[in-house]
Length: 148
Image 1 (cartoon, rainbow, N blue to C red):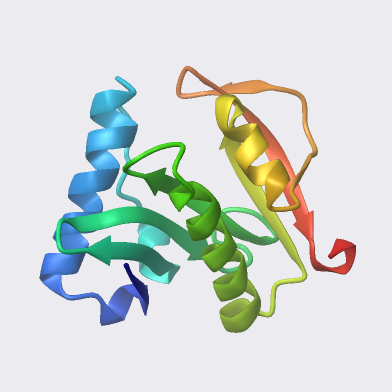
Image 2: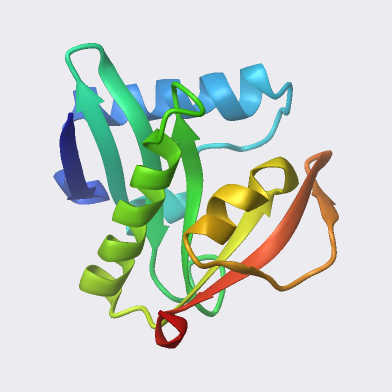
């Protein structure tokens, strides 16, 4: 499985198409959640994905401070095959990219509540009460580099 880390401006049209196709299929179609999935934050992001001969198998984006939150953030996390370690691996790679590209000491996310355990394994701690985002239960979580 090949790891790819590219800033938005480095992505090929084919890579961007594959990313958007995957994200929309999961976050809009599968989760039956009509919202503006493709947003301006994509232009500021590093796009991190694992791919093999069948295409992208795991994906996330890493955003700089002030793009979404005051802190560096990670979002749009997808593992095509679930419960086989891809989610854990892509989150780990996202944390590395956040530290290397943005010098992140603190990372904030909005996690779908069902996936909270995945992020806790990576060192994130819940920092809010549960809330609905586009009709889906979420919690905010924080990762601190000094805790690791």
